[in-house]
Image (cartoon, rainbow, N blue to C red; front, side, top):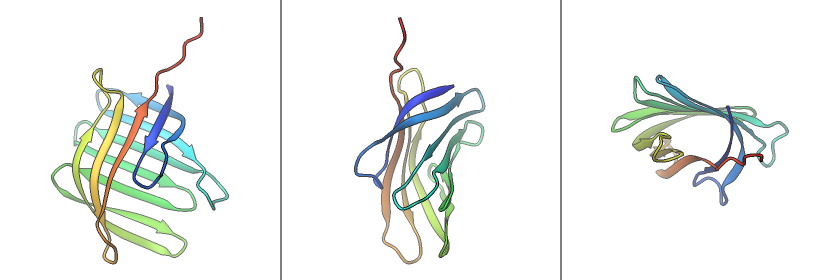
Length: 136
């Protein structure tokens, strides 16, 4: 189903609002949306997924910059950022993952990330489902 969402991350000064395709079943929670970034010619496609069986979350971005990040609470995991200048491997340490439920409409991942040549980046990435307007 299509839902209105607000995406927040330390990478943006302001939340990003858009429509996303959302599914939530016994096996996984999934979101998919597109976003045009400043300086890019084509929008990127994002997929965010939480696998209930493994407890892993993935965020993938495909476009002019491609990213694959894997999140596992309490374990080291890895990711990669692919740019025109090459691939940047990153180490990830996930603090927590929250999935949407009847209590909260938010998918949230809190993590720390580092590549060999950078400072530690702390981030909380969240997708909040906004209240849907109904027609009378």
